[in-house]
Amino acid sequence: MDRRTFHAELRAMGSEFTMELIERTNALLAPLVPAPDESGTTRDIAYGPHERHRFNLFRPAGSEPAPCLIFVHDGGFVMGDKGAPGAPFYNNIGAWAQQQGFACATMNYRLAPEVRWPAGRDDVIAMLLHLASHAAEYRIDPERIFLMGHSAGATHVADVVAAPSGAAGKFAGAIMSSGFYDLSIALRDPFKPQYYGAELEDWSPMSPLPGLLASRAPCLFALCELDMAECHDQAKALADAWYAARGQIPVLHVQSGHNHISGARQIGSPVDSFGPLIASFIRAF
Amino acid sequence: MDRRTFHAELRAMGSEFTMELIERTNALLAPLVPAPDESGTTRDIAYGPHERHRFNLFRPAGSEPAPCLIFVHDGGFVMGDKGAPGAPFYNNIGAWAQQQGFACATMNYRLAPEVRWPAGRDDVIAMLLHLASHAAEYRIDPERIFLMGHSAGATHVADVVAAPSGAAGKFAGAIMSSGFYDLSIALRDPFKPQYYGAELEDWSPMSPLPGLLASRAPCLFALCELDMAECHDQAKALADAWYAARGQIPVLHVQSGHNHISGARQIGSPVDSFGPLIASFIRAF
Figure 1 (spheres, chains in turn yellow, brown):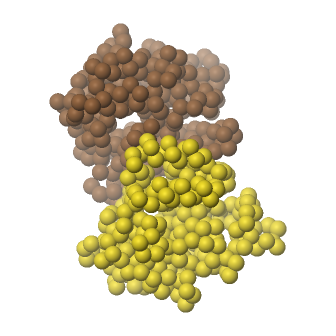
Figure 2 (cartoon, rainbow over the protein chains, first blue to last red; figure 1 turned 90 degrees about the vertical axis):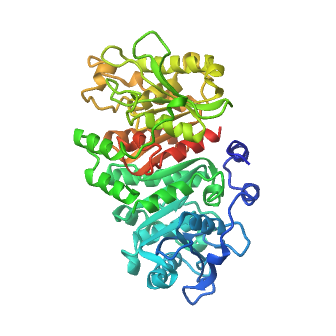
C-alpha cells in the first residue's frame, strides 16, 4: 500500500477515537510492519517481581554496545501489551530498532485499577535501572538509553523525566508521543480515574508538566494530525507552558495524516514518518 | 561528520542570528550536502521578464511525470539565491529531490527595496503557472506541484496559500520553514521595512495568517529548535491562531538541534532530519 492510499484511508476515518478507528487502523498497518529477527530477540525477561514486570529485548547484529530505546506502550493506563510472539505491535518497534542498529526494550508495566499513580513511573524507573545494571550482558551502551512512550506510556515517560528519582542521569533523552502532561485539563474518561483516583477532585499535583519544564533532559514530543482532540489540547497546553517558561516552542513533531493508533504502530512500515525522526534524535546524543 | 559532532557544534553556537553563526553553519554543511546530477539539471530558465525571474530545474532519472517541489530561498526579502553552478546551497535541494525521484525548481524572485509586497507572492504564482503550463515539456505531474520556502521564502509561500489568485488549485501542498506569518508581531529589523514599508505603522493587513487559516491546502510547517527567537514567536502565533480556529495544532515540525541556517541547508546531507519529512508529505498527496 502506498502512502497516498494509506493516508486517504486514515483521513476518511477522521479523528474520533472509536473501536472502528482502532480496528481499521490496526488492520491497515499489521501487514505493513516488519517482524523482528528472532535470533536477536529475548522475550519476557523479568525486571521486577510483578507478572507485568516483563520486557522483550531486541538486539541488533554485531557485538558493539548499542544505543537502547525503551518503549512504553499505550492503553489508557488500564490495558496494553509490549507484544506477544508473532503479534505485529509492538514487535514492529523492536524490528525497526534492530534494522537501525539500536537495541530496544518493549516493556509491560503494572496497570490500573490494581495500581495507581505513580506506579507506571516507578516501573519505567525500575526498567531503566535494570538495563543500566545489565548493560554489559545485554550489549547496550548505558550512556545512550532513551525512553519512549505513546499515549499513557508517554505520560509514564513524562513522569520519569519530571521526577526521575534513582534514574536521574541514567537516560540520554525522552520521546513522548500523544501523551497527557497537564492533568488539570485531562478528560475524566472511563480510564484515567482508575489510575489517578475518581475520588480526587484535583489531579494537577500529579501533572508531569512542571517537572518537564524544570528538566534539562533532551525531549522530543510528537502528536498526530488526526489525533484525538484531547491530545491536541494537551500538546497545546505543553507548548503554551514551554513557551512561557523558555520563550521557545518545544521540539514537537505533528505527523501529517496519522491518527492516535498509527502514531506508534507505523514505525518500521513503508508509511513510517516517525521512525526517521526517532533515529535522528537518538544519533544526535 | 556524525550527528553527535554536528549537533554539538550547532548547540555550542546558540541561537542568536549572527554572521558568525551563518558562516560557521555554512562551513559545516557545505562539505556534507550532495551535488546534483548536472545531466538532469537546466539552469537559469526564465519564468518572467525580470532578471530575477529565473529558476534551476532539476529532473530525476526516468521519463515518468514526477512530482515537483518549488523551493523559494531565504534572505530577509532583500538577498539570497537559488544556487549558482557548483554552489552547495540550494543545489543540495535539487540533488536531494533527484535522489527521491522528484523534480525540483529552485527559484529566484524580485527583491526589496526594488519591489515591495506582494511582489514575492506574485513571483511564486508566476513560477507555478509557468511549471503548470510546461508540465509535459519538463516531465512533471501538474497535479503534484508542491511549494516550499524557508524564512522570507516561507512567507512568500504563505502569501500564495493565503491568496493564490490565478494559482488557486495549481499546487498540491505547501511546506513553510521558519517563516513570518503574523506581521503584527514582526520585528522591524533592517530588512522587512524595505519589503513591507517603513512608513507604514501597521503591517498586519499584509499578514498571510488569516488566509492560511481559511485555506484548506495541505500545509506542513517547520521550525528549528535553535531558530532565532522571532521564528519561535511566529510559530507560537501560528499555533495559537490555528488552535483557536480549528481546535488543533497545525502540522508543525520543530527540528531538534538545528538552527535558522541549517533548517533548509541540511537537506540531502547525512545530518538531514527535514528531507524525510518532506518526502513523506509529498508522497502522501
